[in-house]
Length: 454
Image 1 (cartoon, rainbow, N blue to C red):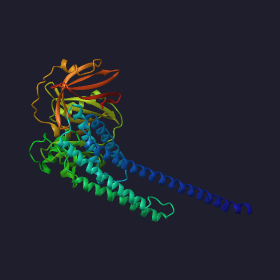
Image 2 (cartoon, rainbow, N blue to C red):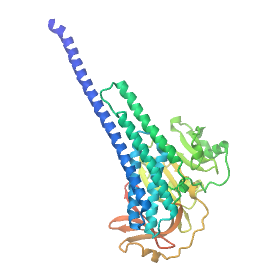
Image 3 (cartoon, rainbow, N blue to C red):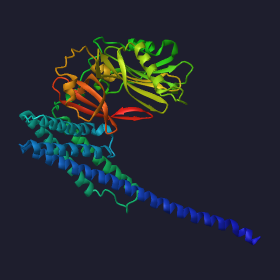
Image 4 (cartoon, rainbow, N blue to C red):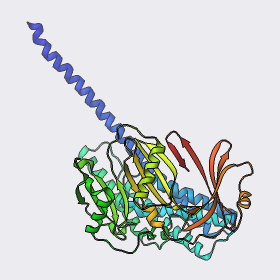
């Protein structure tokens, strides 16, 4: 009986000891995680600061350099440092909206540097306007560097982490550190937001980012008219309920301002809703997404492609050809480019997603097509395909040649498109059909899941 009396206290004591040991280990583990996380953010901060310092120095040197060779080297350094700084900044514990202008600034610095390198390779000197732009970029990078230095000093003064304080005090300290980071970066956002637009021949220039769509038409549509367009696009008999989304405050800034709707199909629950956007100008379907689950693959990619092309024709999009595709999670994704005569026009692009279980179109994105589609006066090539072939490596094994219009910064360029192989790999080489210049090279990656270009 005495032995039984001691069993329960002994078990409880063992449980208590185990709990204490477990709790102590969890406490140490949490501290280890916290230390690792803070060290990670500190490293990101110092890396960002170092890249911005290098960026500022290289921009300063580029302002006084008068050598093409030296400029190409400096501009390459500027491009790399801007990309590195952007990468580190994007990993900082700050909301994207709070650093959007700063990220855009770094992207444009890299892209502008690349465009100047291209100019140098074409034999062009830096113009006074371009040097003035570099001066403005150098000034912004200097402001960026000052804000990071002030933030660095504040963090040191405030002790980024102090293990001896209580958890309540530590939480307050962490909130203060976070507020300091956000305040400084918000100050930087305000300064960079005052910068003049960056106009140049590149995909991230302001005239491209602020480009107005040309494929919408002029008619303004009401919300009721947009709802009728939705019913026509989806099929009125398939619709059980339509509701509109609340418009965000940034909606007017969107590239294609749209009415957005949620559609509940008949005999389906609301969590199976399809979402769709209708342009306020022109009443065009900009995008459609049906996030339903797909259980199994019953269709081949070829069958899905045929279904996608038929869908486009039914919706009034003719002369479209499939170029690249990808299969993932039971969906076939296809890129269709517009074709005028024998010329493929890549800027006029529509993306279609087809469910591989029953061939239903579950995704549609015509934003690129609506941004770019217009009546074009396509020039006649001034050089022959044979002459353009001379600009391609002699041992490049060509299996197809055709004319294509490709986007090049803020321009569209008529090219000969040479598809072929080099040392076992597939490539596409674009040669300007007017002057014989090599405009672009893409590598084709083929796999069991589809074909992509890089």
